[in-house]
Each structure stands twice: as structure tokens, then as C-alpha cells.
Length: 258
Image (cartoon, rainbow, N blue to C red; front, side, top):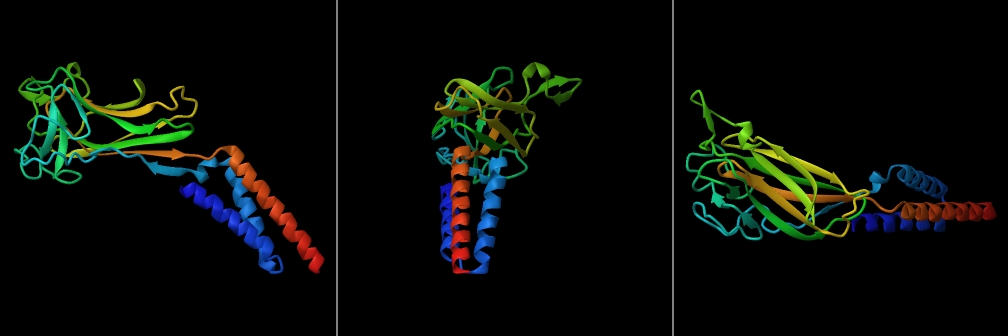
């Protein structure tokens, strides 16, 4: 939508400049727009349009609970165990900060002890588009009371138990990209996953987000997904050609008046 508006506005400016050719600034306007379009042909990202992709219940505020539940999570499927947790009302001594968005977070937990994996996932109505850069972001954290392998009396993450959390983006059943890490205890940090669909064989397949962990009550919140698309080169070429034609027309009319 934004990109289409830009094209229409640029074309209107070109036509307006041609009609008002008697003004000295008309040619300058046309040349400026043509140069802008010409630069865009070599850098198509300059014309990129960023779309916010709809996710159901991205902040995990539904269903509303006073403490925590063991499912369901509105809009999300649970594999293993998980649910929503109102950490603002009942942090249970596990969180030193409020929820990043709203009052609740989602948690996944293979509990009572780590080892196996649990996950939540959502298949979106959006499909994978060509020539788009997808950015999946979210907040992730672990309760300060989480159970870890004990070695020498010290709680720590164990490589045998995995990497803490994993966020994945799929097209259909095909994994597009993933990110894993160890978040802070008692608070949250942002994760960012980026995927460029240029050349992908999975165009047109439904996008799916999956968040997983093999640690106790790993928390997720404020999930977002955007797609930055670029126009086809032919569209830019056509607009540039129209601009150059208008420039020629304005110049010829100016010479006639002179």
C-alpha cells in the first residue's frame, strides 16, 4: 500500500511538472524525480515496503488468568506442556521485571526437570512471498527459579540439556531459519531472526512460528513478524520511462513557448 501510494504520488508530480512547464522549476523537479528513480533502479531496497504480519495473541494476553494455567494459549498450539503466566500479578519469586508487553507471557516447560523439549506454534494466514526479507522478533527469558544441572553445588546450563530456547520460522513444514540461545534469568532479552526469501522454493506456503525450549518454564512475549518487500525491477523501469517522457514533453513545450 505504501509503495503504491509512492508510485502514484511520483507520477502525479511528474505530470504536474509537465503541465506547469512554463515555470523554471518544472524541469528541475522532473530531473530530480528522474534521478531519484534512476538511483532506485540500482538500489531497489530504497523502495521497500514493510508489512506487519498479523499474529493472533502475540503478547499472550489471552486467556486472561490471575496466576498461570497449563493451557490453552489462544491462537497457539502447545506441544509438551505450556500455558500463559500472569507474571505481573503473580511472579512467584521468579521474575524481577514485569512482562515486556501487557501482563502475561507464554511459557513452555518439559518440567519438572529439563531434558525433553516443549513448544508452542502458530500457523499464520500469511504465506511466504518472493523477494522479501522477514524479521521475526520477540522477548525471551527464564525464571530465576529454573532447575539446571548441578555441578559442584552450582546451578548452570548444561550442554547436554540443549541451548535454552529456539525460535523458528517455517513455510509449510519447511524450516526457513532458526535462532537459539540462553536468555537471562529473571528478566528478558530480545531475539531477532532474519530470513531472505529471494530464490526460496517454498513461495506461497503458509508461514508458521514455533517457539521451543527444554528448560523449565521458559518465557516468551511480544512476538512480531514483518516482511520487507521490494518492487519488481520492471515497475521501476516503467516509472522511470514515464518520467523521462514527461521531461521530454515539458522541454519541447518550453522551446515552443520560447
